[in-house]
Length: 525
Image (tube, rainbow, N blue to C red):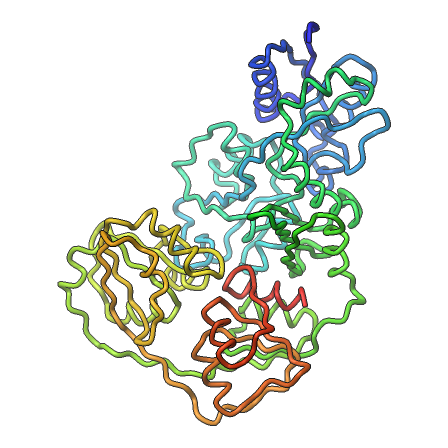
């Protein structure tokens, strides 16, 4: 391409980074370009929340007008700012690779409480103007006080630095692109299945005139079709829900070994407990429409659910079901008892890492009041074990996500191989994680509790039966069978295998083996 291209961009530090990224990428292909800074309505309006700006054109309208007028050749946008429909005459010619769409919770160090979920102190003031973030944060931590936060990325961080808030929530992508040093804060990184991001979060969109076919072809070197296919699902969900409205909507689509996985969170208001859904499909066709159909308020949900676990008043699972007036029969079918009362301090002397596969393992291990090595690291299986470890005053260095212990073992092995790892376990532990470690890893199994089945377990007539461990399956099926109408959810693969031993092959596995995953599974029935 012989002509010098003019790239339209907003003037914020992040927008300029994005525009220069495109400019430099074009230069590598021998295409010269220069920037033109354009101020948008979103830069002038400082009294509206981002939910009412994102996807409504407040950050894009003026750039699009200059494109149509021919004063610029292409515009670089944060894709999440774009309306779901292009103005007539304009198209998206290319989308970037996706930056990590995780969220960061930045916390002033004197406001950290590791015993609390998300590590921010009870009743903390958290800054965000996103109803999507607000709804999901309050679902985890209803004690938090959420206050509006506006400004570009450095401005928002400076407001935290000036102690206007105890913590703020911000997209990881912007921080990563600007290379901002966050060492003065405590940083909690929340993955896209913990806090579901905005549709198209972390992706750049390059917009051009539809008639400029030469430029379209030149820009294909920057285009990532696999990202575009995933974004099409997210943005169709957004469009079907009203396209850029202030609804607290998060939607994230990714491909895992050829399968599309879609995580969605939606509430009607920012302070309402959100409904969450996880769906997967081999084909993206019609997937967005299917997602939206699950949020139809006329859809019939189960009337009753049994879960083989006691639930606290603050239980995420309990609140998610009670929102829809679903009756809950929550009772454990097992008891756990300690098998040792004193710990030999020599066991811990040369330990590099301690791995917990369950909340019970954390609880019974710390009952022994261990004297831990100074630099010991921790690994856990699932969010429940991580939360229990926090309550004991420690952070996890590795958290296994997902329902397959062998996949978690393979990930953990990358960090643990060649070290000495202590596994506090149940006496009847399957030792799945241990089996995935290499021969040069020293494994020390420490039975700290055993499971006892309750006698004369009463059957449940609930429509949905949720089993949270293999032992609970054993206890239930001693005297009871399933009725044909009952649907079954197993918290993980080991629980599922135990159900299969009992002749139950038609069960559902949630994406994550925690209460959020279980709530998603019930909502997705």
